[in-house]
Length: 102
Image 1 (cartoon, rainbow, N blue to C red):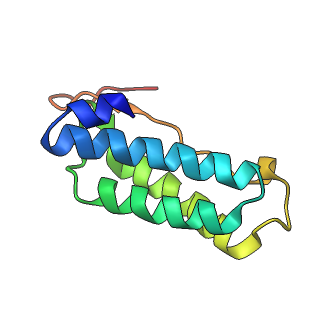
Image 2 (cartoon, rainbow, N blue to C red; image 1 turned 30 degrees about the horizontal axis):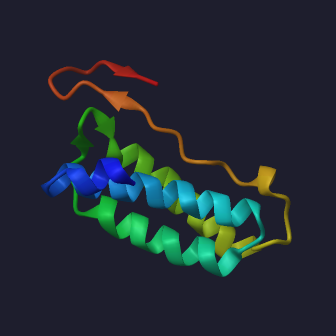
């Protein structure tokens, strides 16, 4: 949290959004579905305003995974175990080339 507070502009929004997705996952694992949905909405909003690649992170891919996780939570809630949902994984992408890494 201290990292995003110290940053201005889109880097701050990136850090905040990534942390919020992580917090949403934590809430989901603890069975706090309303908390997971609420924090995920904030995380997706923060990440949604950023470019496709920000600080080397492929946000198109990450947002898609986060949205799929959010849909899973909304559809199934606590009816399935936390392992049934896939946590969004950060993939790096070189902004100037077609090279990707995980």
